[in-house]
Image 1 (tube, each protein chain N blue to C red):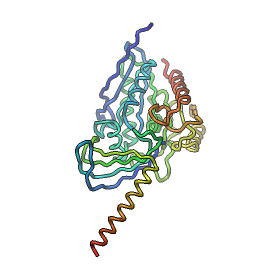
Image 2: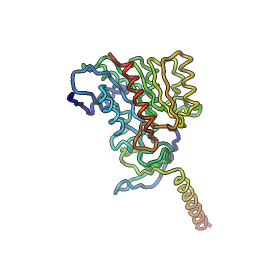
Image 3: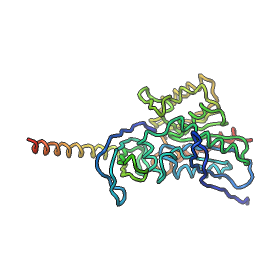
Image 4: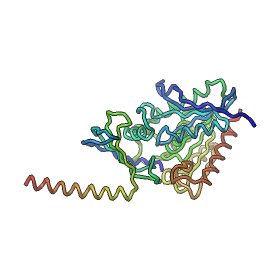
Amino acid sequence: MTYESMIAETIKINGYNSNPINAYTARPMGEGPFPGVVLIHHLPGWDETYREFTRKFAHHGYAAISHNLYDRIGYGPSDDVAAKARAEGGVSDDQVVGDTDGAVQWLRSQPWGNGKVGLIGSCSGGRQAFLYACNRDNIDCVVDLWGGRVVQGEDDRPEKQPVQPIDMTADLSCPLLGIFGNDDRAPNVEQVNQHEEQLKIHGKDYEFHRYDGAGHGIWYYYTPLYRVEQAMDSWQKTFNFFEKHLAA
Amino acid sequence: MCTSIVEIVDAEGKGKDGNAWFKLSKAVVCYDHPHHALLAEAITIDFMNSGDGPGTRAAVELSLASAKALKGALNRAIEQAEEELAEISS
C-alpha cells in the first residue's frame, strides 16, 4: 500500500493592493509536480467547509489554496466574521480579483507546481470565480458552483459590485464548468439560461450541469440543502474537469 | 440561494454577547442560507457595534414563520408602548 500524507496549514499571501491576507493551503507531501486549485469561499465565510474542500483536493493529488476574502474584516469565528462582512456591504469585486490573483500567483511560484491552476468557488464564490476568469487570463479553467448574482437586477448594482458578471462573458479567458440545482432561486433556471446564452453567443468553452431535485448548496452535507446523489455526481464531474484541464 | 436581501438599520440600546452586554450601533436583517439553523433559508438578525470586532454580536437565525410571528409581537408591543406614551403626554 502506498504511504499517504499531506501538509495543511495557514500561510500569508499578498492580496489586493499588496495587503497580506491569510490563506489555508493543503497539498500531498512530496516533490510533485502537483496541479493547483484555488478555492474562493462562500458567503458564510472562510470556514470549516472550505478547509475540508481544500484538503479534499489535496487528497486527490492537487495543491490547493483557499484565501480569506474577509481578512480585513477582523478575526474570530467564521460566522461572526461573515456577519460583520455582510453588515459592511460585503467585499468589492476589485478586492476579490486582487486577493484571488495573489492566491494564483502564490501557487504559480511554488517549486512543486505543474504549471497549471484551476479556480473553483461556490455560492458568492461561484460568481466571484467566474468574475475572476473574465478579468484575468492566468488560470487554466474555472468552476462555478451555483453562483448567484452572475445576473444582477437593474436595482442590484451596489458600489462594491457595480457590473454584473454576465456582461463580462466576452472576456472569459478559460474553460468553464457550471453546476446548478434547478430548484435554486438565486441563480434560478432563467438566470442560468441567460448566462448559457451569452456563453454560446461568445463561442466560449463551457459545460453546464443542471440537477433536478436540488437547489442551492448541493455539497453542504451539514444542511438540508445537501443532495447526496447530485453531490456525488457533481464532485466527480468537477474532478474530471480538473483532470482534463490541469494535467501537465 | 445567494440573495442580496439585506436590511441595515441604526440601533440604539444594548445587546448581550455571552455574559457581557455591549452597546449597539446597528441591526442587520437578512434572508439567506443560515450558518446553524437546519433550514434552507432563514431570516437572520445580527445586533452589533460597528466599532467592535466580529465577535461582538447577538444573533438569531429564524424560520420565516417565526420571523413573521416576531414581527407581529414587535408591532403589538410597539403599538401598546405608543398608546402608553400618548396617555402620558395628554
